[in-house]
Structures are given as C-alpha cells and as structure tokens.
Amino acid sequence: MLRAIAGLRRPDRGRIALGGRAWFDAAAKVDLPPERRSVGLVFQEYALFPHMTVRANVAFGGASDARVRELLDRVRIAHLADERPGGLSGGERQRVALARALARDPQVLLLDEPLSALDAHTRAAVRGELQDVLGALALPTLLVTHDFRDAAALADRIGVIVDGRLRQEGTAAELVAHPADAFVASFTGGNLLPGRADGGVEVALDAGGIVRAAEPASGRVGVAVYPWEVGIALEAPGDGLNGLPGTVHGLAPEGSRVRLRIGEVVVERPAEEIERLGLGAGTTAWATFPPEAVRIVALR
Amino acid sequence: MRQSAFSALLALITGITLAFLAIPIVALFTEVPLRDVPGLLRTSAVQDALAVTLRTNLIANALILGFGTPTAWFIARRRFRGRALVVTLVELPLVLPPAVAGIGLLAAVGTGGLFGSTLRDAGIELPFTEAAVVLAVAFVASPFYIRQAISAFESVDPNLTDAARTLGAGPGRTFWRIGLPLAASGLLAGWVLAFARGVGEFGATIIFAGNVRGQTQTLTLTIYEQLESSLDVALAIGVLLVVLSGGVLLSYKMLSSWRRSSSTSPSPFARSSSASA
Image (cartoon, rainbow over all chains, first blue to last red; front, side, top):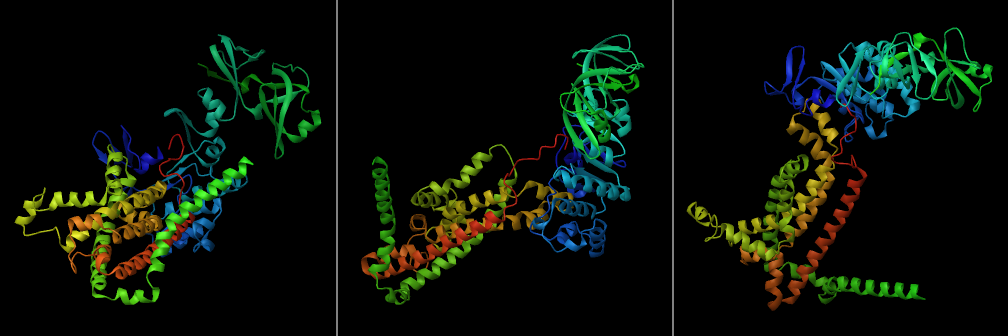
C-alpha cells in the first residue's frame, strides 16, 4: 500500500489523491511517477545508498546544505554526517532514512515497519524518539506495522487491515474497548476464548466454564478479555465476578510486571502481587474478571 | 588401501590435465629466445597489426560499452514476456563458432546479403574493411560484457532505486547515480573479459574482414600469416598475447573480489514481505 502511494506499484483500481490532487486514478488514467509525487518513504530496511556518506544520502533529493544540516541536527546524527551507512547501527540508519525522507519537504510521510529491523533492546528507545520526532513534525504520516504496541505509541488513529480488507479503524483505546472481530481482539493483545451464547449474557466456553458478559449475545462467539484487566484469585471468586480455574504456567517477567497463563488465559499482573500470592508453575488459581471486561466478538 | 589408490589416480589425472594446459603456454616462452621478443615485436608486420588491433578494439569496446550498458540495464530491471528469449539472444554469440559469426556478418551486410544492396547504394562497403573488424570484434565480444552487466545490474537492490525515485530522481538520474556506481565493479569485470575476447578474435575477422595488412590484419591474424615465413615473429606475438591474457585474468579476479566485498544485496528481485505495503 505504501509503495502504491509512493508510485512504486500500480494498483488495479482506485484513486490516490492528496488534498484534491490526484496522483493515481485508474478511471481517469492518471499515474504520476514517484519522482513527481511528494512523499517521504522510509523503507523497512532503510535502503540507504551504501556508496554515499550520510550527508550525501540526505542531500540526494536536492536539499540545500543548510536544510541538510538542520535535518541531521533534528534527528541527532550530525556527528555521523561523513560516515558511510555500512558503519552505522540500526537506530542510526533509521534516523538517516528519516532525515533523507524529510529532505524534500514531502506532503506525506510513509513509514514501512520503521521498528521491525531493530533488535528488541533498541526498539523501545527508538520508539520513544520516533514518537517525539513525529509529534514535532505535524506532517500527515502513514505508518505500517505488525506490532500493535508500535501502532498504539506512534499513531493517532489505527486501521487494522487483514488480507487487504479494513477490519476496523479508530484510536488504540477504541480498538481495545470495542474490538470489531476476533482478529482485532487478539491483535490488540487480548485473550480470545471461543464459546457459544444462547441469547442471554452467559457464554459457554468450549474449554469449559461459563462467562457472564455485560450484554447479551447469541451463536458462536469469542470472549475477549485483556491480560491487564484480569485478576488472580486463589479460590473461586464471588460477587458476580467471572472466574476461570486453571494451572499456572508460562511465567515471564516483563519489567515490574509478570505475564503468565492460567490454563488458556494470559494474565498480566504486577510482580509483587504474584509473589504475595505465592504463585509458581503448577499451582492452581482462578483468572477473575468482571462482566464489563468482556468483549464479545463474532466467530466464524 | 583402495582409498589411497583412488587418491593417487586423482592426482595423476590432475597432473596430466594441468600439464596439458600448461605446456603450450610454457612452450611459447621457451621456443623463442625471450630477449629477442622486443625486437621481433618491432617488425613492421607486427607494428601494423598492433595499430589495427588497437584502433579496432578501442572503437569496438566503445560500442560495446555504449550500447551494451543501457541494454543490460533495461533487461536487468524489467520483467517482460520473452525476456528469457532476449537473454538467450544476447548470449548466443558466446556459443556461436566464430567462423559462423563471420559468415553471418557477411550474409547480413555483404554485397549479396540482407542489407548489402541498401548499403552499396549508400556507398558503404563493409566487408574487408577496418570497420568490418570493428563489427566482428563487437559481435563476438559483446555477450561477455552484456551478460555480466545484466548480472551486475540485477544485483543492485531494487529498494535503492525505488528510494531514489521517491527522492525525486527520474529513471535517468537513478541509473546514473545509483545503478551505475553500484554495479561498477561487475561491469568492469565483464568488460575486461570482453576486451580479452575481442583482442583474440580470429575466425569472424578473417572471414568477414579478410587479412589485409595495415587495414584488417589484427595480431591474431598476423600469427597465422607469419607461421610459414617467420615462426619467431608468430611466437613473439604469442608471448605478447599471453602476457596480455594473464593481465586480463588477474584484473578480472581482483575486480570480482572487490565486487563481492561491496555487494548491496543478496537477493535481486525479492521484495520485502510486509503484507500491506
């Protein structure tokens, strides 16, 4: 899709326009070549010209020396201006690619999986930096990613596309609050428990157990609950809370929190809570959540 | 016991093969007194042949580079129906017997040939002229260059040329500033081989251009002519050409290792796997 917008790939049908000016229109036979569009494209593997210095890369689009210097300063790689791309780290190369894409003052910025070429350790840091840069730019930006966390951190609005179809569009919070279908629910990090409802608020799970939702549903449905909205109890909960028993396994610390599974349900809680409850692999526990935390999605 | 018998056999066969390949080269250097070689090379027959060879090869190589490079770029960067056929056509002179190339050229532009009458009316007579040598050399040597050039251009990461386009460079500027520099070592390696092949051309030249001293008689043709009269001169030319060939091979190897160390991508036409990009 990004390549089509940039003019590198021709779609079969449709229209691509920016501010009323058509760049591509299948019906009207308009197809501007890439060099006549105004895009800044940051490639997944950065595509920096290996035979040119960083400065020459950024200046390739024809930017003035002053503009090049300004961009290098903005992404904080001025000290690398005379280096070749081969000697740079992943994060540094990404910054060069960004500066280069911005050099022509494009009307739209396209980022193709900007963080996927980085190792996990650099990713979080670069994500934060990218957030700052994009925020300061105020430039329409399209970002493609397979990682919901990247999307949630970097984007104002998110569109979930599967097999070429747009499944849902909204802010990250909206997607989590009301996932449109099973894919969006699991993509945004939710548990997806298949089951069947009979027109009431109760869903009978395939794996056993009953879950009470906040709203009625019927037919084949999936119960979506998010790991950070699930609590843990050592015995069956009361008070109208849902409770699914299971064996604790798959504990994985993530900073001050721990991700673990109780049976099929992924749960995420603060580390000290896990310690306090004395949970370890093999102990039995209940995953608890209120009916309000339940999202119902249709299952095929 | 059987192991070492096999190894011994291998070694023996290898020895025979290497001797077979080396002996003619070595014999060249032993059969003519090496200090006589410079003098022998100064004879007028050789000097004339040197001039013809240099002039014709210079022009032929300019043509090969000038026409071959854009052709290779075009073929390398596009997928089109019949592409395999086009590549085969470009490679054909590689396997065509040189004499056949010569006859073919005659059939094309000779007086009785395909374009013969058109050319004659325009006052152009190609066979048995220096221009004919140029054509013969260009014909047999071009696939060596074009084939390698196609491979060199193919190995330039398409993302790089795509990036150049999104940065405002048209197809021409992209070729000049990205494609050409990045393929340069491969192109050079291919040209070096084409050059060697061109200098060594015999069959097509003698059939299409004839053996006219001072006009179409190249170094290799001189060897042929001097065989009867002055074997030493022929041997001396042989020595010269072996040294030239050795230089060519060395350059090719050095360029190939330079190329390997600066390649931009291992996979020419593999697009990245982003589903929605």
